Image (cartoon, rainbow, N blue to C red; front, side):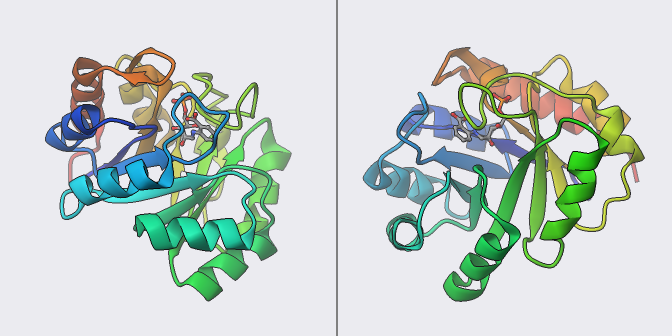
Length: 214
Ligand SMILES: O=C(O)c1ccccc1NCC(=O)[C@H](O)[C@H](O)COP(=O)(O)O
């Protein structure tokens, strides 16, 4: 299977075009006002339309209530909702069942017990995204965590790796963890919220070069 590559926090048609041309399989739209990558729903809807048929659109929300979540899904019509706050297994499962959409849950990985706790989401989400622990923002902080924790973990559902990934380290990350999806935001930026098309292309090329051959 070709590796899945998510470029997160896209906010302009130019950088969305760069991610699509570089072969990203997933494009992330952050709808969370404190983030430098925040996009209003109207912009997210246009960027989503640009990606249609070329990459899956992932809409990111943080601790949104059900009305906000359903309004965002209605406006943007993403392929996937990624919850990046402290949402419970019960909450994400409710959204998946009621709104009939693919759901991912991001979890900040500190240590082995965090990974053990991630089992609570099994059967309730379609994919787990293992990220660095929250700092100033819940995600998009450009920091990584101990990848050996993932290599040792008994994964029971689909999962992806995020947190401090760059064109320079994504190859090692894939080889060390066996991730089938890699996600980056800060690592392909020239400043917070400003995506760099050359870094996006380099990241996608490095991820594809590192994937195991069949
Ligand atoms: O990117 C943000 O600004 C953001 C804000 C609030 C919640 C989540 C956010 N990003 C989520 C992502 O999926 C990022 O790609 C992931 O955390 C990795 O970020 P980075 O370490 O900067 O590559």
